Length: 196
Image 1 (cartoon, rainbow, N blue to C red):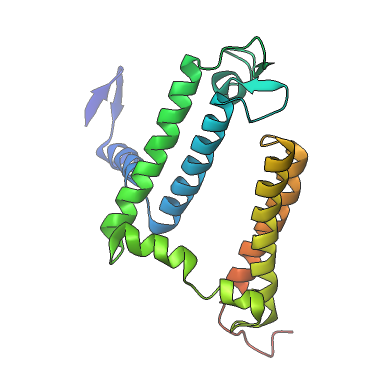
Image 2 (image 1 turned 60 degrees about the vertical axis):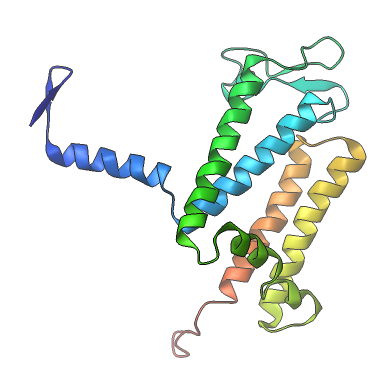
C-alpha cells in the first residue's frame, strides 16, 4: 500500500488507474478510428476558422466553445476577433495528438500498417453496395445513408459557409448514424428463426 495525499491507496486502485491511462494512450482499433476521425475533423475546422471560412460572420474561440465560455467568448465578430489565439493552438495540438495516437495504434496493430488502413477505407464491401453489390438491401441503404450524410455536410457547408451549423449537424449525424447502424446490422449473423 502507498500513501497518496494522506490516504492509503491499494495496489488494485493503481492497476485500474494504469489500465485507464493505457486504454487512452494505446487505443483499440475501434477507438483508434474514432481518434482519427475526430482529430481530423477538428483540424479541418481549426484551419477553416483560421482562414475565416468557418462561418459567414463569426470566428470561433475553441477555448471558449469547449469550456462553455468559461475562459473566453465562444464566438467573435469575424472582422474584429483575433484570427489566432492560444485556445486555437491548444485545440489544434489536442486534435493532432488524437490523430497521432490513432495512427500509431493502427500502424502497430494492423498488417500493412497505416497504408493498409487507408486503403481499406476506400476498397471494402460497403461502397459496392451503392450499386447493388453483396450485402443485401440493408447494406445498400446503409451505404447510401453514409454517402448522403457526409455529402450533405461537406456540400452544404462548403456552399453556405456553415461548417458549425447545428441544423446541418443534425441532418448529417442522423444519416451517418443510420448508415453505420445499418451497415453493422447487415453483417450480423442470422438469428434464430423461432425468436419472432
